[in-house]
Image (tube, rainbow, N blue to C red; front, side):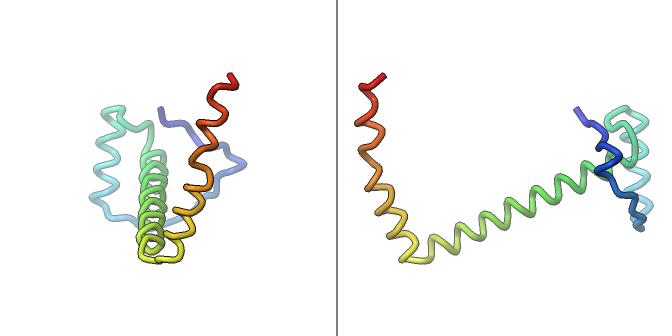
Length: 92
């Protein structure tokens, strides 16, 4: 469900968008898919930011996997804690 952002957390900002995008948002609004053009724009921006963050994370993980020292430290840490779960399993 799409909810409105609280006014105290919102900032009014003017931007220029292609007419075709606004027209499409108006169609979605008329079909009750989004409650308003503003909400559609907000949702699109939130989704774009989330995608960019996911891509940034994926890039960082690719870089980390190419770093042999990082991989070795990670494997060492994993091995150090490999038995922790099995040691505590009977305590419950």
